[in-house]
Amino acid sequence: FCTPCLQECLKPKKPVCGVCRSTLSAGSRALDLEKQIETTETTCNGCNKKMYLSKMRSHAASCSKYQNYIMEGVKAVTKEPLHNTRSFPNRFTFPCPYCSEKNFDQEGLVEHCKALHSMDAKQVVCPICASMPWGDPNYRSANFMEHLQRRHRFSYDTFVDYDADEDDMMAQVLMRSLRDK
Image: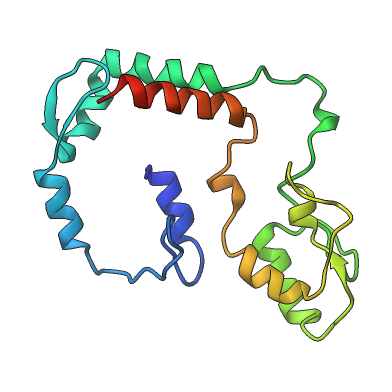
């Protein structure tokens, strides 16, 4: 994980793992993982130099061949930006589906609904899900409060590149898996 991704995982009041969503405990180190990182050898995909995983980050920062390798992958999966910004949904602020109060960020919407609408049983459309490329703006959640607590404990923006073409990305991964050892 990069630092910004880890920071997103640590933002909630109860920090969670970015992979499995299990609760993280402040101050406890994953010693077995640290040892594995210190003793596992890898090869730079740019210059083919062998090193331990623990040294890879500092090496990657100074290896121009590795940086070119990464940029090739980024270019291969990034679509040309569209110039019509009106076609993009707002994924930063949301209205409350119960009272239509506006301009909540994701965390603010969850807190607002917990405080004011926790007993409201009306089926509503989740504005967060409706703003996603895969979201259905007509799907009404049977239990919106439970949906919020289960599905929106983290921000999708942390893990999703909305501009990446998934088919191109999968083709690139398959090609690199065949090429890399």
